[in-house]
Length: 457
Picture (spheres, rainbow, N blue to C red):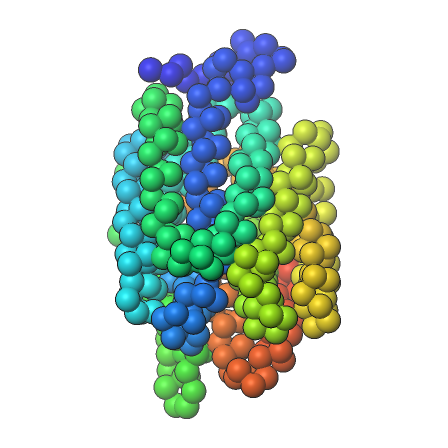
């Protein structure tokens, strides 16, 4: 059994030079990094091969749903995970979530139609939300406070290898073996990190004041928000009289669910914890929205192959990893890096939108800036969330942060898909430019929210 060092014990007895790879944390750090590496391979590869999937399954109208279905479904699992982890500890939720995610990979990889592919992606979403919430709680309860920023920097470092080879390998596999093997080939990768992390997961204690669980009201709110997001995106993708009722019903579902799932004041960008969650939602939506449509732009407008298009996404991931390492080792306030990141994400999206109208390769330096912005912001926001959360609310608040990530990304990607589809294939360049403008505006709202991270004293 791996020895689990509690934060209060570590603060009193840990040697100053011991870091995240110190004797008491080495196995936990390696397990966490490997799990995130596995999930990162999936994330980086799927974005590259989606144009090939849409072409093979004749599914361009459902292109955005290949991303949004995963994100919307993960909303339900994230809500379940928050109370589940707080009540029972992270071990069982982590393992079950990872198993469901693998099942989704199998369904997506064998899907004969675009609708079944989207269903597989939804199953992936049901599984993917739980492990990430569990890992946040592991970080909060295993590592002392002064090491948390370094742990999140290590998580970003886990994206280095997937960022270097994930998009290119995914594109090469799709080009030479078929896109299905991008999903099916990832399945064996789940075993090593799961086995390595198991002792640490079992050794993490439960919260001493854990709530009884999310409760029926929270589940209802999650269903309303997820259903509302789906209906809104469905309505945006339709034409004629059916559009308005679906969109209005979707807005009603979101209006009911979100205030019950996120910290009070999140939608108003209230200072402190609510603004931490708001910034994550806005930056994730803007960055991953742009990241999802860069491969489509490169392959459709500039004649790039799937392999070559992956290189552009690679540099964004490298910028993310490098910036995260810088913020993780710095003593500057986390609020500084979150604001810096929001500014750089906005600048990167503006630059890449203009660059893609001129040349595919011109997007490379622009997306380094955008990726660096996420590297500075995401880890810092994670640290701020844990610092501002009482121990018995770490699971629920980590759940809220993941909800902000997934819902922000799904709504923005889905809305951009509807926008691009509305322009039609004959005016695809205009639709993609309009989507880029929308992404930039959302990122700019993230800058405003990042100015409100520090709570009033």
